[in-house]
Structure formats: C-alpha cells, structure tokens
Length: 405
Ligand code: NIG
Ligand code: FE
Image (tube, rainbow, N blue to C red; front, side, top):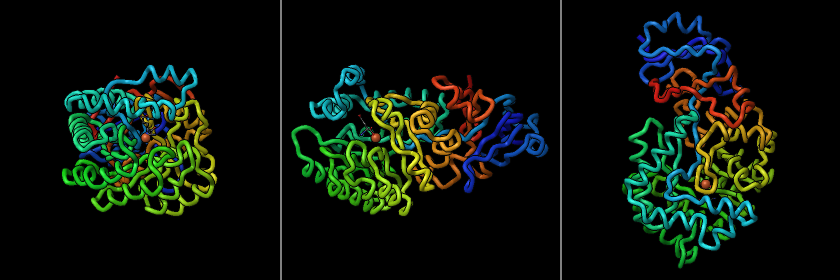
C-alpha cells in the first residue's frame, strides 16, 4: 500500500544535481511516509506502486507534475495595505520618497504595531491559501514591520502559529533591521536590534535566519555587518537585502560572511556575481519587485554566464503584492530572459538552497519530501508561456492532497 501515486502525467519534471531539469514523458511519482519513493515512467512506477492499491491516486493525463514551489523571500505578514501608494507610484512618486515621508515600510509598521496577534495570524493564513493555490509548499516569511521587541516577537510568533495551522511549511526570518524607526538614528537603532531584539528572538527560538536591509539611507555595510554577526552569535543564519537601489556593498558583505542568501542584487556587478559564486551564497532574484516598481530587472544572465544558479521569490509585501510563484516564473522568463527550465529550477531546488534546505526539498528525487504540484499544462514550458492564469490544479504536501480544484 502506497500513500500516493500520481500517474500517466504527460510530463514529470525534477531538478537534479547535475542537469538543469530532468523530464520524464508519461511519468509517475509515488510518495510514502511523506517522502518520494519512486519517480519514472508510469509503466515502471505502477508495477511496484499500483494506483488501485494507493490511498490516493491521481490520474495526471495531459498534465505536468513538478516539485512544490519554494518561495524563499517574502514579507507576507502585515496589516493594512498600501494601494494608494501604488497609485502615487504610477504618477511618479518613488519608493524611497514615499519611505522618507513616513510612508512605505514605516506606514505598515504603524498598522502592524496596532494589530492583535490573532489578526496577524488570520492575515497570514489568507496569504498562505493563495500561495498554496499557486503551488507554493514552503515559504519564508520575514518579520520587520515591528521595529521594537514586542512587535517583532509578536510577528514571529504569528508566523510560527500560521505555519503550524497551515499545510505550507513556514520558515521564519527575523528582520528587525528592515528600516530605521521614526525619531531615532540608524546607529542607535542598530544598538537596540543587537542588544534587545536579537536576544529576545533567539531566547524564544522564533527564527532561523536574520536579515538586514543594507541600502543607502537605511543600514550601511558596517551596520549590516553588526546586525548579522550578532544574529549569527545567537544561532541565526545571515541573509541580506543587497544592492537593490544602490550598489552599497551588500553582495560583498554576504560573501564575506558566507550568508545563506543575498537577495535583490539589481545593481550588482560581475565582480559581485563572482564573489557570491566563490563563497557559495545563493543569489535570490525578485522579478516581481522590479515589475511593481517598473525598474530594470536583475541581470540574471550575468549569473547564468558565471554558471551560478539563482533562486527566484515573490517578495510578497505591501509594495509588491503578489503571492504567486507561477507569476514569478513568468516574470523570470519574460522580464529577466531566463529559460523556462532555469526559472523552474530557480523556483524549486535553488529556492530550497536559499533556505538552507538539504533534504531534497524542491526536487522529486527519491527521498525528497513528497511536496508536488500537478499543473494543467502539457509540459513545463507552458507554465510561463501561458501567463497571467493559474495553471496549478492540485497541490500535495508530504504525500497528502492539500488543495485541489
Ligand atoms: O524586499 N526592500 C525592502 N524590503 C521589501 C519591501 C518591504 C515594503 O516595502 O514593505 C523588499 O522589497
Ligand atoms: Fe525583502
């Protein structure tokens, strides 16, 4: 008896260690005890795992089976929205101008400070439902709309609770250094993050990673280094928002510290690209952010030329309000000129690497978590080709169907 068998798929797709993507025509996948136990041609897989003996059997004729998407960079937990800023941006206001006037992140901070923890949990569960419907089975969520001990802890607790209550796996990142709160300066605020927030978060075991917005007018390279080193001393692995608007040196800092990931990288140079490659930092590109801000996209080709795989993420937040990894894949292709194969790998295996997942997450190789999606497309190329729609139809987490149209 097998827990789950998906069979007769027109294509089964998985990233492997050596090639970009491996595809199987008329393929099948079997999952038992939460992990993939077989992948291959339907004929072979069903010999050992007959669908009629499986607890759940899915006929995937004319459909494509892929690993569940991993979304490795989001600020999906917030209160309120900033739809009016969207309109202001369309009329020419910039992201930094809005922030400098107390809007943007600082406005969301005011809303999150006022929100009760339960309200935050409900907000995040709603986002998770949409994400799951688009095929995301693992997601990173950052704090960073609190900027004080009490609210940062409240956010991280809400992320933990939403993760416990939802099929999506939630990975929590502490990002107290997301903005400088009003009425203080960056240096004094970094003291507060290092001396008060990081110990409070670490003592409660609320986060796996520590992130910082290393950007002109926000936190300098030295301030970012202080935050990330203090986090690391307390067991929080470093991540960094690097070179988004200005090339301040965030990518170089990520390499120096051996961060798990460096994210955004819109202004990074070839020197930065090789530094990241040499130090094994996973680059995370966020095409939705460039789309939302109508700016140039990150230079995905520079990474491709250097043979460094990149991850992609939604960056879901009130400035870039998209929950869909399907859309991120489309934008990776249409905006950054990535091949569909590279984009799918970026949304699965490399995205899992950006979260330091080493259990095969983001693949359908034997032994990997039984997280997969069935998309109503004949092959993976049709995912970005047929854009602006939801192609994902069925989502499986740990061998259980958790969403089906
Ligand atoms: O990754 N750049 C900084 N942080 C977020 C935006 C958060 C917000 O605007 O609320 C980002 O794009
Ligand atoms: Fe971000």
